[in-house]
Amino acid sequence: MSATTRKDPGVIPDRPLDRLQAVYRRRGWTVWHGSATGQYWAAHTKQMVLLSGDSAQELEVKIERLEQSSRPTETTFAHLARARRSGAVRLRPRPKPQGSWHRRGAMAGMR
Image (cartoon, rainbow, N blue to C red; front, side):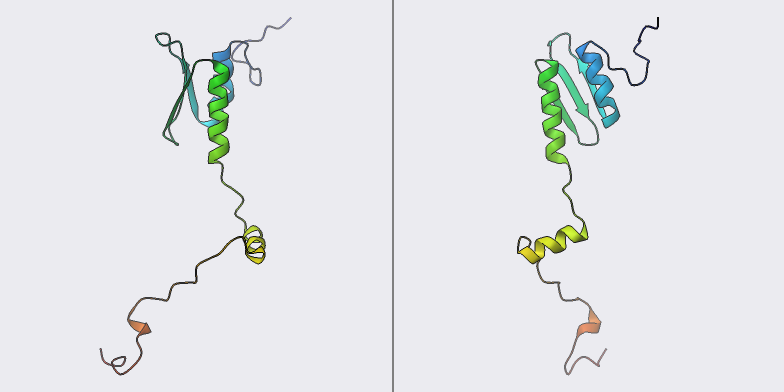
């Protein structure tokens, strides 16, 4: 018989803290349990976010909600063209170029 240990890849541990750490470490989260507060904590340094929850399930819900809200939407050219044809996206007109080459009139030739 082989016993599953914490070091086995692909095995999710039974304890809530170990399970959270195993799942969210790959996504850039650091998860811990505060013995003084009794809360579960998670920090993501790239997003500069610190979350807390009274239970492991509450913290997991908060992490998932944050990740869903910060996921980029589809921004392919076909998506933008389809949205523009339907009138969903209104793009501002391209700005006129700034610079000396754009001058016209009597003073254009004098530099």
